[in-house]
Length: 354
Ligand SMILES: [Zn+2]
Figure (cartoon, helix red, strand yellow):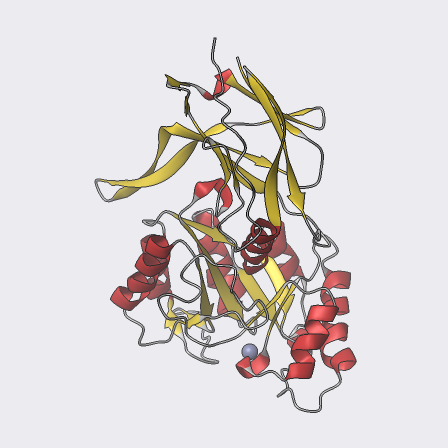
């Protein structure tokens, strides 16, 4: 019989993002979905011709998603944006006319843009904003915070030790972004990825135009399609969660606000809950990481672990990571740790070893 060893519950420390997310020593909330080492959001501003023609299909081919910050006043055809969202991408608010922030009407520039996006693409809500020109005022950021946005992307370049590191000191209404320019080398691009993988935080890339021989997209900071493809291929080599900006931020916020509380334990099972002090408007599932070596016994197979929440069985899988083999990336699995996703504040979660 497999037994959980249950030492005295260590007092939960209510300080810092890193301190209250584990239960005993076997179970913890993963910093990022599926226990990836870090998170990356690709963001594209202004919805220029290369975005639907080049970016969306290149992402789709690699199973990646991104965030498109649209100037709603410039969009004449919403069908390509609906198609992008149907593939898992995010369409976010970049205002109606891309104004400088001083003296603007938030209603006309920001609320109307949000309403337009949500009317044209009813299957997604607008959670995030990208500041036009990267500029904002105190009243603009306050307006966004009070209007239910989860974050706004700025344009300051992250330094190692800032958003690259996993912390609860992220300024969600001025998150950093690394701008990809025409002259950005592949080595520079990869350096950012290495930083975020090593420090376990998050990284946002900011792109503008992407062009090819046939798509003449030269609005700003244009990057040729072959370079863009190389960047995506490079990104695939890292153990990073490529998420929309909104999903990345919402996971981070949910993680920082949630702790594990033990409910009860028995020799073969334990029960806990994920509790958020001030629940977010919309909860996001968190990945739980379960060590497979329990009380000296190795659980060799996910089918031996039964996780239930609210009467439903949650899928359990081994932790996966990317390995490079003959120039190709392949998924491999570690059977030392298992992951499953659970919803905070949505009923007790039980883990039972069969
Ligand atoms: Zn812009």
